[in-house]
Structures are given as C-alpha cells and as structure tokens.
Length: 211
Image (tube, rainbow, N blue to C red; front, top):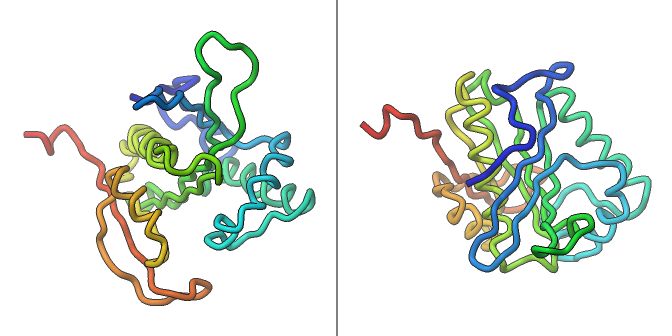
C-alpha cells in the first residue's frame, strides 16, 4: 500500500498543475521503505553523481555532466509540476528503523507525463541509480506512482498509462511487467531512438470491472 503525505481530496491545483505531494512506499521483501518526493534544487550534486553511471547514460537522452546541466534538468522538473505536464519524483530510501537523520541517497526517479485526462492516456518513465539495481526499487516506485495517478486523476478521465522503452533494454521489460504493465506492441524505429521499442500498458481498474 502507498500512502500520500499530505493527502488532498483530489488534484488540487497550484497554477495549472497539481499540488506537489510526497508518497510513501512501505518496506517490502527485506527492502526499506521509500519516499517519492518532488525534486529540489538541493539534489543537484546527487543528480550529477547518479549520471556518472555509463549504463544510465546509455538509456537517457538528456545528459547531466555538471552544475549547469543539473540546474536545467531540475528546472524542467519544477516547471513540469507547474504546468501539470510532467510530474517527477525522486525516490529515496528511508533510514533503518531507529536511526534518525535524513533519508538516504536518491535511488531512482519515476515520472508521470501528460496530457492525462484530456485523452484518457498518460505515460510513465523511470530510471534507477546504479547502486540500487536488482532490489526491486524501480518496480515498487513505479507501482506506487501508478496507483497514485489513477486515484488522483482517474475520476477526471485517466484510464490508461503507457511505458515505452527500447527493445534491447531487457531490464526495463522486467520492471514494467513486475509493475503490472503488459507488453502491448512492438513499435518501429522513431527518432531519436535508434532501435524499435516496446509499448507496455496498464489499465485503470474500476469497481465495475470486479462485477
């Protein structure tokens, strides 16, 4: 179960976008709980460090190589919340029980992309920091984001979420399937992507579906 802090009754708006929230993902299978929170300017150094990973750099289109890149990257995430078109969360693990201090380093990011309710379809994306791979971090964070998206925007018309990745990214296929996103189609090459892609889809389940 995912909890939300704070817990607004609906997608209350700040400017034209939703109020930023923090989601808590409970501990599972021996892994610590996580917080999914909006990115902050103070994350610049951690972001630069994450992007030193060559595997991550292979799959991302926007490199972050220094403070200027980090500032632009973070500004785009802030703007996404203002417009409501790109809702991005930094995933951080909570410290072990009984230990104080701030949550540990950033282990992943997950994002929800518009237009959401205007078409009934949104898109999700993610990456995982090198040291956190293989522990189910991405699938748990993606599952929490998905649940929140359907609860928050489903009443307004969001019914489908898409996840896209290149066909040679087998790890993303596993993450998508673990988070309940079924493989729907193989997509042709589309610039700037150099190889075909996989389209994974997850549908919003409503009470009427259980009847």
